[in-house]
Image 1 (cartoon, rainbow, N blue to C red):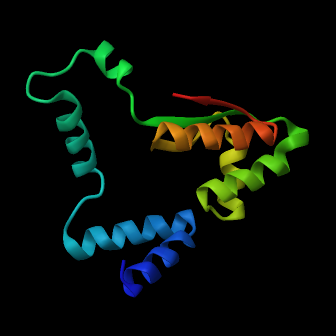
Image 2: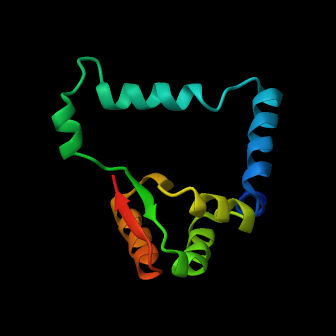
Length: 132
């Protein structure tokens, strides 16, 4: 990667959730694109194909997982909050809202290895977590 792309990536990592949302809106307006439409369409095309795959076959070949924070014991809340911030890169306020709104997806559509690693970190902090 070039120095320019590295710099942009580092700046993106430091954005709050609100700033990231504003950035998406600005990109959509500036380039006349929609962030929502292509992702859904692409996903349907790759999963279903021309004939469509049976639902049972999709479950057997699952390659993307969601890590869901199910329960946060009140005495472990701060430790879990720190782990959520480290995993998501969110600011304190956004991470706190995420932890307090459990059950809540922490990361979505990630590889199995990464999902298991995140699940272990959260469980070590005292949270109850599931992978779907």
